[in-house]
Length: 254
Image 1 (cartoon, rainbow, N blue to C red):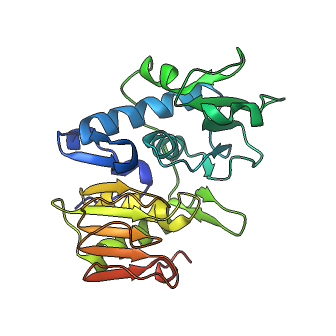
Image 2 (cartoon, rainbow, N blue to C red):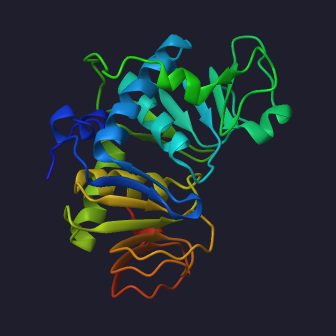
């Protein structure tokens, strides 16, 4: 298992391989560790080009898709801050193309969309920019105590998120052969912790979010009982069919 001090340490080039890193059953998308890591590097480079740097915020729509996850990892590599509230004040706002009309580029805030071409010339086409970027990310010093994830109620550092991910790995005894299904919205810190736990264990993250799509997995970060799995992280008062679970409310992010 990896021994990271920052979230960016979960993306070592030597660990790129053909094993699935992320699966999104609802849209039948799957990314290997090779593609996932390389695209995360590219995401970081795009964010840097768009003016994101240490201490600046990227507001990401919590759509169940690889792009928000990869953008979050790009933020992590830069030492910047992410929120999954797309309405928050930010240097960059990343939303689905279908929601472009609800937002606009204004002042220092840039707007980027994913999933389709943008309607406005001032809006960044996220996938196009990522595709054309350098597939390597330069070494960047990031402090473990730096804030990475913000919600309305709290802010979480790299160190706190990694400690919580380590807790999930231990409680669910995850290893590289497992699939960890994540059945809470990305707007909840438990979902982010679940993704980091899968990367920490070198397992496969199955991103389900709040949908009812059914897919077999070995572990779950769960909001409902939609995914059959061997282990789960469940939302408050939720039940799951998995033989072992850890409640999202019990994940220690203090």
